[in-house]
Length: 543
Ligand code: VG1
Ligand code: CO
Image (tube, rainbow, N blue to C red):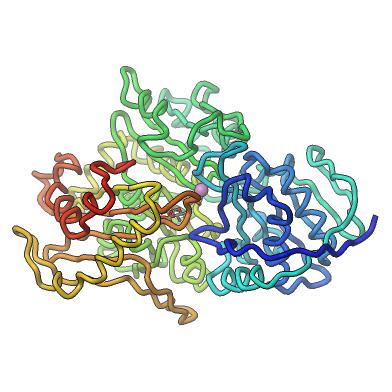
């Protein structure tokens, strides 16, 4: 057994996107592809002699092979210890929890989140820093720069490590500790929420249905919802994690979580439904025949935070990504706490939470969390809702409608055009940029443009600047259209169009979002020339 230095050549496509490097499995399986990226991470951070790394993934195809490679590379690169989830499993929020709890140098999380898995599916890798959160842009840029000049990597030659048995083994001078992937996270949840109250709710005839979508949250849901909170076994579905997620798309939205949606809209529907994604950081919340938009969910949690033990002191502030609706802004205003608007991607919330400026954060893409970790957290959001429901004892729909009546309703929808040819998608974005001059002050029926720009963010904590974060067209009545290109896809380009209109008048709150937003949708299609340029009549997914 010895450390070997292997010669390699750089790959030009190792630039991390919104959340790490994501590629198809066959791309990751090219010779030295994974090793190059891992060595680029290790070369971009300072590995002290006592450094501990956290390692785990969502269990998708190629997870186990990649874990073995990374363990051997960590041993060859001077780590003292690696904490690896049993079976190579750690959900994204659990990895964040473990990094923080054991004060480690950082962690590597293997996941392509909500993207499908399997031999021809997607794989991904991201690095999280010592606060438990995704590496900020200056770190991901350094990793990318390193990947472009890499010529060698180091790996310890040894047989594979057994991942299924808890306990410590050694790999050269490095200690590999196989840990229970669920326990630390479950304890953290128990410290935040009133488990006794939730248990009382779940054993009083209130019925829930949680869909783990054959992804990583299955074991977490079993331990927390079933074992610690007493939910009956039939409340959980698709709890066995599978390398290909059972052939599904582990994305908790109305399109891909259709089995759950059918149950929640069917006869004799349960009172509460929820789902999470491939790596357990997203959440979808449903009431009986009622869908809670992620933007509304964030606002409702913020407004009810003091009902939950972990947040009873109130919130320092809130933050949302730019395309997320301003529903939470209205709550912040009433609570008289600061509200921050960041670019898309959880990495932008880290500094705000580290500085104590915000407690709750959220994104329209089914992501919500708080400063208990530095990632979004699917089960946390489910437990937060259950805790609020245990106190309020009202249907989900009533809670949301009462919220709208108090704060007004932000009608919201997102249109995704997936797998467009990259030049076409970029052409639409350039066309929008070229139209800024004409758009300024223009009128479309009753809508008058107040501003249009490309969102640029200056981090209030470290002053770093992130440009080109999405085209915004704001109207004088507060409504808004946003266009941006996705940074998580692995094929072609995905164009996202976000639509939002504020409605203070409660007599109009019963309208459907598509109906309420019809004017804005027409304007979005007109100004972007989307249909003519892409040949697409309809989006791939509407949420
Ligand atoms: C999407 C979402 C974004 C989210 C990111 C990672 O990015 O829009 O809000 O943070 O996925 O989610 P994009 O660039 O495709 O729009 V996940 O669950 O990977 O952690
Ligand atoms: Co995810």
